[in-house]
Length: 595
Image 1: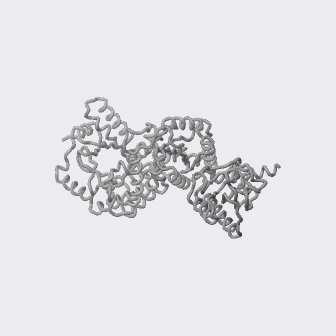
Image 2: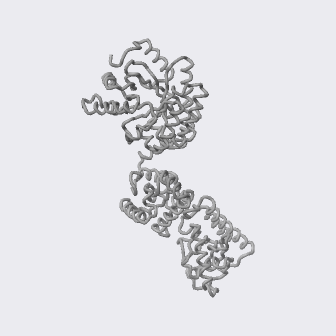
Image 3: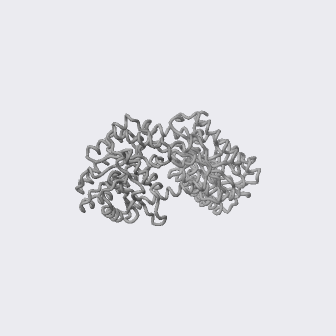
């Protein structure tokens, strides 16, 4: 008895691992079931799976209900024995004459077993009739072959992208197929798709780095078990990302009440989580009607809402068309920017002059990246650069800018121009161990003195990774490259850290410059203090965003050495810059800004 119980538990475990019970009907199974019905010329056929107390129909023809009791169900015998069973007449069968099927008018049954590669019987492919009949050898052979096809379909789904090997949950592929099946069976039915994002990408990466991949897998398994327990056996959960789960609400739920329940449920799950202090959960919800929205759009919309919910741990956000449009644009720009790097006519550099405030002479220019999309037109750098900086394209982008800028600088050197040039790098570039070598090699190949190149980094970028930034800055300084701290005053750096930076220039952020003419003495005093501090730390000071002569004059009086802004010039194309420089050279070249 104990052996039999153990075998039955093992069989049930094998069945449940396949994640078939209580899933929607599927055309891939229905097609086989219809063939069985046609071959036997009988009105009823089913793919029947033997659960603990019931026979559940994954596919059915001529049957209205989804399951029958397991007691005295012939498919249970097929699952237990893994042998084909034929009952020519229920009325003469000692075992099945008083069964549920017999009482419903069934007189004939034939079932071929569904057997896993490990030998576990899952159930049967069966055909039923309301009249007694015999079977031929060819019919049994056909039924056995069709049962093997059902089993092949089951194992194919399980093996190829249908079940996640870590969580044991159905995957995004299965989510898509299940949603298509639901839309076919219940068109127009209102549902909510819910995506639970367990952790941000950076949290997951740090967690994996510190705790190891096995601990991340444990986290996924813990979360999937908690989710399945909360949903109950009748509801399916799916793993749709590295740390993302999805599920559907019951039909036609009241949205606010359901979201309150979801928030409460996940609050409880979160409180018991072993990683609640190192990850943050975000939940996105996408309302939709079955059949009106594609499965991919349903899932994408819920994922988009989950990103909107990232504002706080445990937050829930409802799908927003406006936000989704913005997410889709960002994704498109990211995809298209990779092609832009390889194209010859989309990316270009423009150059904004930087002037000596005492003499009015242009001392250097800042190279700024511009993108003209083939269909969207000019894309603001404020839009595409933050997107690119967070991806693997950051390295290729920096290299493109470096090559284009150094090529231009080499041309200026050949023409006898003393103009220097600055380029920007971001915090993401600090992870590139060979960046300094690439800059050195770029200068060497073009026979450029390192002092003619200035590298700008924002104060916030430096403080985001201070140790890596310090190493890179020292290497660049040792190579003879000039260094500038951009947007000074907006970051979180301390005085102790600033005095250690091997930089040469500090650029005061335009927000402070614009406040100079507000009439507030505190604004002037703040800029004076920043300039005085920079000088005491041996930095040369550049003011950004100068738009009026009054501001330029005041900054020169305060002691700011250089300025940059629309007062002098907007960013110029390379050809425009040459013309602008020529015009400046013939227009009072020795004038001061205060004149």
